[in-house]
Amino acid sequence: MDPQKLKDNFAQVGSNGIVVAEYFYADLFAREPQLRSMFPASMNKQHEVLLGALSQIVSTVDDTGELVPFLQDLGRRHHGFGVAAEHYAPVGASLLATLAYFSGPDWNEDLERDWTAAYGLVAQVMTEAAAEPVG
Image 1 (cartoon, rainbow, N blue to C red):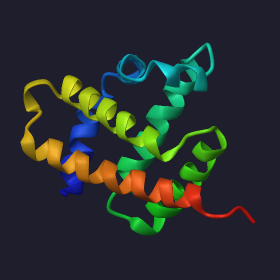
Image 2: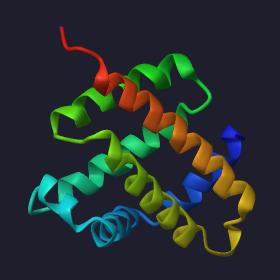
Image 3: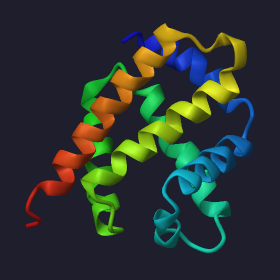
Image 4: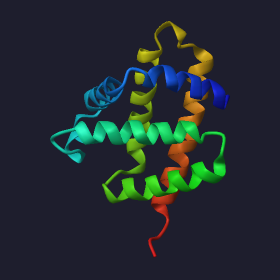
């Protein structure tokens, strides 16, 4: 996994602004319509939250000392919202679809492999943190 490639690609994708989040959630809810009820009626704030979290993750992808605690906290909070381990696969699929769409012709097998690896680590840390006993 090449952290700089992820950062460069996310800068390219993120330059599209809020439409990236809108595309992501449209894709996610098309894949898994039952997940829509886990979100507020108005998604405006959620779009901002998603982009902020992705930005934080990508900016610290090569600093595990900062990234891991952020992901652990994110995992615990998502667990509190009712997110279960099985939700991570469709979220990952929608994330990859979104990144591919906004990368256009720059999307390739190397980027897909790097993003798949990065998301796998993110999902693993979040899932493990969510499974920890509260106390």
